[in-house]
View: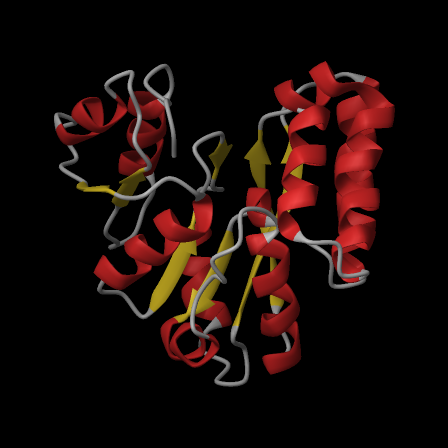
Length: 219
């Protein structure tokens, strides 16, 4: 995460209320607003890592530190359903399941956010999903895959493609919640550009550095 001081305490409060036995590793990519300090002072006492900037670097560092059999990658603006931990453990009782994600709902009540939720569900049926739906991976599968590729964009989609080839993934019910704020600000055209066009450009082999520049324009 980066510069999430406004929301880090609420996120850690949310995680502390979830039933189940699990550890929390906060990966801070160089925040200048005191995010890491706030996380370190939280009563739940998470492990706090200061990592290089970039989601791939941060998530790889967190996975290397975590001790559990399942690795769960939760974005700062997303929330897990109450039964998330039990659901993941249930899914991993199938030895053929390498990991997966959660069904996703965007948190605003407007028509656009409801459309995004439906669109995401359709994409998931085709094996297309991203980190905002909270990826979770069996540790042995993670180790075999080598973690997130160190690319500046689409690291979640790239991992998902390899995860899908490894076995039958599971989309767990919930849903998980994620913030609609950024997509509402971007609008329909820019959201489609971010979700569809950039993915196809990635598939076509456009260099990640060029996609990053385009994504920044979208944001």
